[in-house]
Length: 271
Image 1 (tube, helix red, strand yellow):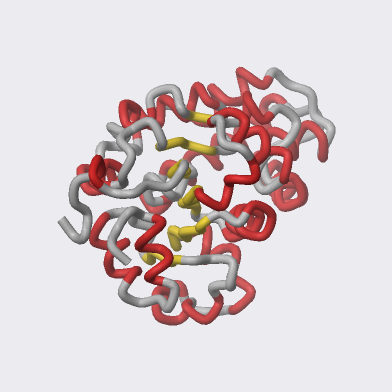
Image 2 (spheres, helix red, strand yellow):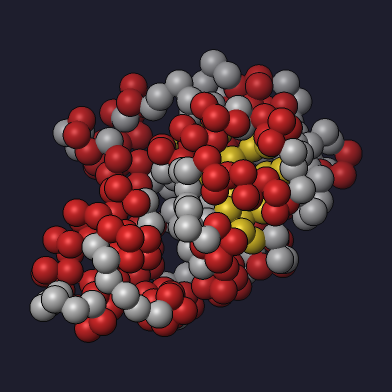
């Protein structure tokens, strides 16, 4: 395997932290798009004053960028009232309709040193639905109950400082030691908080979310891998292109960046 080796014999980070959507699976598989459609359907049928899906989309776009999570955007921004548990069940649907196990992603997670006890999922999704997605991906046993999401965050979410602080408390890592953790994430705004506030080693899984966030550059997404390199900010330590978090993709990324030595150490590889 590309540079992996026996995790038990290598130095490890305090924690390897994974976002869920767009990180442990590629958004291009259609699951997130399906969830987004269900959000609009939920709004059109549960939110007073929203007449149809088209209007729901306009309302969603207005508030999501400010609140970074749809539940908070609709409740605190738009002012709608509804049952949160029903919202999560409806909008996330059945993950098995779109998600399936990936031996390559599992191999990468298992290649990281420290066994399973230092692997965590940190997501703005509700924990129950996150666990269902991990089950569909064949990854639930890699993380067990080490999943922190909307339920634990309460009235905050990534990329807010409070959300990270609650996560570190959840996994028993002192905030002063956050720089010893590695964060895999597909959103630049979340990686920026991880690096600039907490000093984490940051790995961008560059897929559809990255291209959306950098859309103002008007670069052709079809040529994304070579064209977007100059748009990656300094708070990102490593860029894994293609929305694919596998050993091969990570090894390829490590060969392409000046900070490869630091990243190799953080990932438990030889510097």
